[in-house]
Image (cartoon, helix red, strand yellow):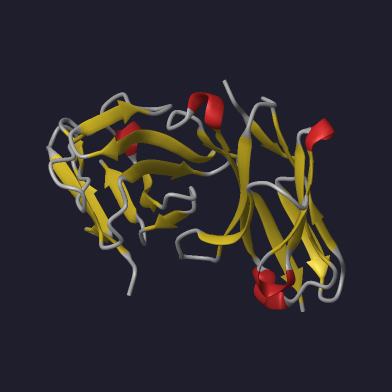
Length: 115
Length: 111
């Protein structure tokens, strides 16, 4: 079965630092990949998604992610974080070989940005 | 405005007392899903529905039921809640391109 791992449980950065959050999935069939953000006390919101084509995907709020198929990875990046980026970030995969049964989320990475 | 609504937002109940969490979407999506969110575990899929009258188990279905009698509604039913079902629950409505739209969440405490 598909699984998703996120490299860091909690990341602490100062404002203006660069961010990279790791995400790896286990099964290499046809996949769609997502990053969601959850601000404190709120529901998940989509940051960006990859379906096909250019492996470098740009999302909202200056975030981008790169799909590397050979590494089963979809890492999230932002060149300069802000205090308002403090949130929990979830990577998610939908696996078309098991459509409907394999909408799988990673355990999340909590990002704390210090002012 | 496209949205997913859930009710109640907060619920404290006791072991064994049946409860229903409602979920409704106004985007005419066929695919809907329920998740529970627990610290360190991310979101885990409980049940999903690909269309009216079609439901399937996700990764953690034990202790839950769902129904899908009409496209817009997808209630989650706990027939006999137990303390290990204390969690934060999210309903999602999923577009044809697989983007998920989440409800605001229901925080459930079972004593």
